[in-house]
Amino acid sequence: MILKNNLQAIFFLNSDLGWIVGDNGLILKFNNGEWLVEESGTENKLNSVYFASEKCGLAVGDDGTILKYNGSKWSKYEKMTCNNLLSVVITPKYEAWIGRGKTILYNKNCSKK
Image (cartoon, rainbow, N blue to C red; front, top):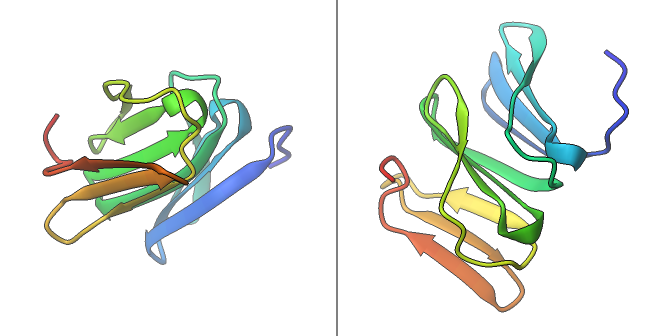
């Protein structure tokens, strides 16, 4: 696979399932040995990706972009800031922490909107 976009972050749930995010809204999914391009719905650079389970993941990026994965597709999350977001983590209780510098966003239950 030859890519024209820079890759920014990678996350694997296990050896058979993982995601990469990058420039221009690029999302690649690794599933059982095969890389697939997934539709992100954004052209913004994506800087970080994290999954709590196969059906609950978040990707964050420039201009406050937050994308949620529900097990089959990505959708845009409500915009909470215009700042570029650089990092996301989801706790075992499905609490999401997103941030960059002095901007910290929190969601009590990222498995629900």
